[in-house]
Amino acid sequence: MKIFLLAPNENWILDRISKEFKQNLPELVTENVAECDVIWMLSSWMWKNLPAVLLRQKKVVCTVHHVVPQKFSKESLLDFIARDEYVDEYHVPCVKTKEFISKITEKPVNVIGYWYNKELWHPVDKGKARTSIGIPENAYVVGSFQRDTEGSDLRSPKLEKGPDLFVDTVKELGKENVMVLLGGWRRQYVINRLEDEGIDYKFFELAPLDELRDMYAACDLYVVSSRYEGGPQAILEASAMKIPVISRNVGMATAVLNDNCIVDVPNNLYLPLKSDVERCYNNVQQFEIKYLVNKYAEMFMNVKRG
Image 1: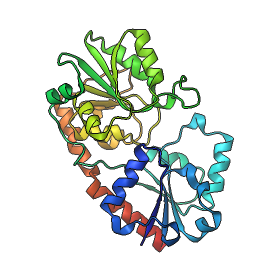
Image 2 (image 1 turned 135 degrees about the vertical axis):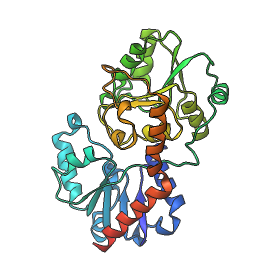
Image 3 (image 1 turned 45 degrees about the vertical axis):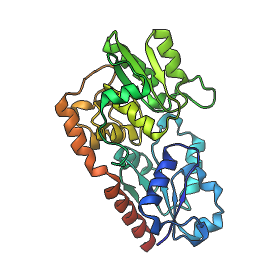
Image 4 (image 1 turned 30 degrees about the vertical axis):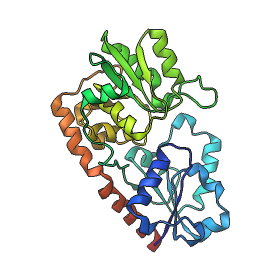
């Protein structure tokens, strides 16, 4: 069996997933779409980049990472229906996404979570990490490493990511020495809010993975304030690094986090105990890449056979 991965090549998380899959199962991957048995659409919007005749000849697995109901317009539905003609099976990282798309397709929907790479995401000394990236020792650091601003105008909040809820949560902490540590890109909305509120912050745009690891390690708390998610990866990565993390009930939160850590921020605020951190760390082990890639391979093999 040979798999062709259709990824967006935008230097973001899907390209990392594509790269890590190829590194772990190189014998199953081909860069020539004509030679493959299965096309894996890691980015569902890229389906029009391949000829229809080719999509009909191959088995097609389409990953739907998450759906924002408020943004799922009539045009979105029509595009889904058009693509659905070529898709043999779907893959989603969480049950919430399956529940949505199962209402608009009769194709099988496989739930397999995202993975994390233990070689990258593991506990790191907080003091050394803070020295490395210039974070004061006495600061109470709250992390957020995802996009929060719409790319259309670089001003409007990407509400599904909950940037408004994130800033409100930081305010709710009420700590004088709080510092927000931002990563990723399109952080304009949160930065503007933090400046308006007079909250100290530091921003590392698209940090390389080694630096990102130090950013996690520097955190006293990581907050996932999203309204809708597929994962996010931060839940896996922070848990694997033994960083206290709290999240709204989105994506993979219930599969990874201790129940205490799933909270309706900013209305309910909880600071994880050491026991919570240990439980999250133990839970996340099942999502280590060496275990998960085999589940993905099994899914593709079943699709090929079908």
